[in-house]
Length: 430
Image 1: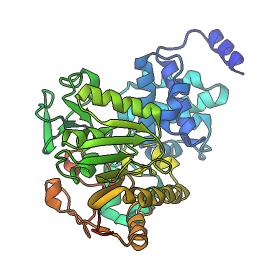
Image 2: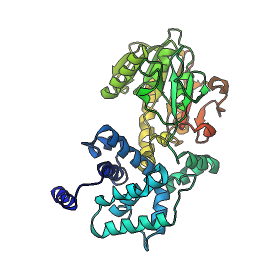
Image 3: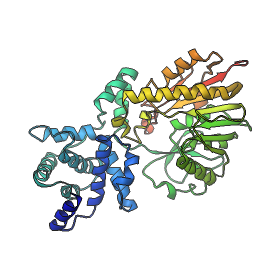
Image 4: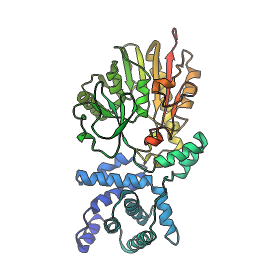
């Protein structure tokens, strides 16, 4: 079939420049929506043979199509006599063409010319006709992106309509670039704002490696909300800390920069390699251990533990829009079971009066509030160490001594990732 497709394309003449990137974008969408694969995991296969620029373009188109999927589908359905099947290739091609024009400022002729070679026969005529009708109608996208209906309903039920509405507004555009500064370092030159001491948000789009200070280790990329957990362990003063499920390492770097003697543990050797590279670039030190924390144990108890547990990652939907189409309630329960096991094990590694910060980048109460409730009932020697809002610069008000960062936080400045964070103390004698 692939040979026949190439033969037909050769017969039709050379492909317009940029068509291979659109083909890769279509494959990425298919991998996420039909196969349930993470966008990043599907990229190597979908973009095989593309140069770096086309690989980035394919990823960008697919990610933007996922942000605006419900809005674009609404437009497509408004221009067809009956709805196309969700998995129809014509629908996928139209999604790619329309999102380029409506959200990425691609000229209409370029968008359609590079998409039409991806479909044949009747579907090609359909794609061309629907696209042309919507362009003549001067179709636009709403200011706020439609969330997948089941996600919108779930978040409205858990957090209220205002939070769900804020999530939809923030879903409409890629998030800004946040960086954590190494001690004594200055932010890159150019426009930006300080959200918290030692944290900076850059305006506009950037190639990270080309920014001033990156190669010198002056800063690392980290969403402002992702910086909260390590902040809540305070200054290190040489104390020992475990960073569990540590890769890719932003929190490890924070703890090391704060003066902790850090052991960073993660099950993924490839992700730990990236952590080690970041440590070297920032001229910071930590012991790096490749291990499953359900099998591993430290040689002796420590004063501080940070457990940023594996989760559904729905809180980082702005950066990874595919998660909203893959994560299901059964996944929340699966991750919750693993988190309970990790938390129950890791808390035993604390010295008396030591503190553990448990965090997840999830917007689901099954991963967060419910985990903490079960833990406190099961482990009598531990208690919540209440978080004071001043510890996070007054940016967020803890509820019941814990932090739930929801869509709407820093919205005027471009938003923040969703997190649940609790700090737990081991009682003396516990």
